[in-house]
Length: 375
Image (cartoon, rainbow, N blue to C red):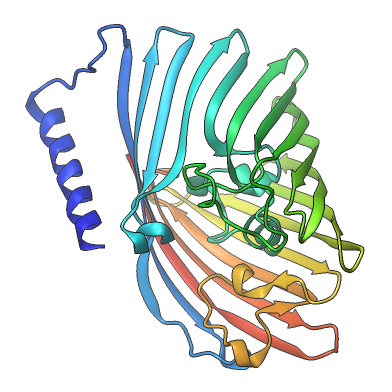
């Protein structure tokens, strides 16, 4: 971990030095644009978790430390790579690949090969720098973190837009979720993944930002090939909408998925989230943003990963609440945007109610706070 910290500091120092008096030049003379980017998110979590058998969490840490490079070769070709120095794989002294791709653009259509987020889940595919709640919703984390269904995969991607506000995204990727795509090193979810099979995702969307009532509606679907010993495949659907009027905005999405298992037949996972936000722009400097979100997710049996959903809570194996039947989550937050999303502070209170099939219940609640700086 120290090695990674020293490396990050050295890279940042070199970058700032170069931008001071010297010009940063790409190796290829055909590159027409070169830039680097960064995202720093410092966070504090104070989650009460005695009911789930653990100690209360009271801890400062870096949620994300992104450093990226972006190059363009004319208007059609380009490449991006973003590394996260704060991600969990640092335990083996590796750096997490947040995203990497080579892209070709033709008109309003873009084709990519690399590691990216597949087009499933609005909140999941929204940049963490623009989220209004500190952590993503319960239903989102069940599909992305427990099932390892969506989020980052490596493969082929395409997307584009048409007249009238319509757009599409598709992906053909490895079934296993992220890290650098090497066989046997991908993340295994509840149903694992088939190492030599591909998965397929698609999304269609309509957006109208020009009317008095801002509207975005769409649907997505995906099929992930899972390990034959656990299931044959996991098929899921996502319906979403966003509606804005003046300073108010409502974001809703629903997810449902079915895994065809070998031992117990079909196992279902489903849930939704609804988020209401209101911006107050007459602050002395910047703007206030008030946020409320409700999210719920349930599964066949006790297959909801509560320890994944309530991020960084101290769950104990003996308490039996790591996997539950249902999680109901309420989030109440306030954000202060000093310079839009480039510099902002977020404070939120998260309430999680956990229920098992046998009727036993527990709670895991607490505050989270985050400060963000983008460059």
